[in-house]
Image 1 (cartoon, rainbow, N blue to C red):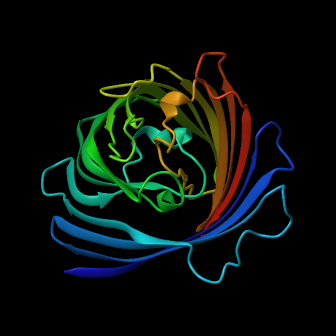
Image 2: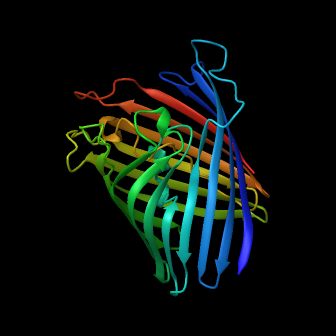
Amino acid sequence: MTVAPLFGTELRYEQYAADRLLGANDAIQVRARPGLAVSSGPWSINAVSDAAIAVRRSEAGAAAERAATRPDALQLDELRLEYNGIPRTAISLGRQQLGIAGAAITGDRDGQQTFDAARLRWNGVPGLSADLAYAWSSSSLWAADRLLPTSVPGENIFAQLAWTSGLGTISGYAYQIDQRDTADSQFRLLNQVYGARFSGSRRLGEDLSLAWSLGFVRQTGALDNPTGGAPTYWQIGNRLDLADLTASQISYRRFAANGISTLNGNTLSLATSATRGRMTVGAQFNDFRPLSETGAISNRNLRLSLGLIF
């Protein structure tokens, strides 16, 4: 049996503007994720907590909203049992991050989402891989500050099929989301998501390489969701690798508290990050442009996020 400590930290700055890049709301966030990993043969258990402090300032006042003297949010981030005894197959059960197809581009500020889920990952054919997950609950570090409770039950299915060649990896994925908050009779978190993504990389030198990605996501209402809007998301990104690249995806709730299917518009996301040794610096820019449809959110917004992870 092997026992190993786990610890991660993150320092993040983000700025949000309703109609321009500078001069609106900003936030600084510090997170710590202490945990423990226990493994024996094909079995392993990961237990990780998550504590965060956020200091925010808005255009209405120069002072911060609160003094950062204690964690603003604290939760069990991960408690996962994993089995790797089947060749080219991994099975996991418990609270875990899914992050299938890097769909964090449809998230929101301040945190990330975890699921109580069962997950199967398979790569039995060279170049071909599959990822299938069933989740019965979703949790978010900051959800209690919004319109939703910290955990939302429901029956969610996530599926992805990917093929890798010399040019890069192309993947197609589909989600059936059923997050039912009984206090919200409109069930705005019931929706369908499908999309495709292409990513690749090229090494430019001994300690330098360039990575890129292009993604398309479309989302519609489903089941009891009365909203018929179908927003479309495009993602274009690149990463400059200064050796030992580690990419980070950050999202508050993949399916936001007001329901992304009410955000009738298009989102362009540009992201880049670079890693040197154990330190990663990244930036992400999002531009949401609403469509002129009945019921659509009318405000255009721009977001710039900078992160430092070590």
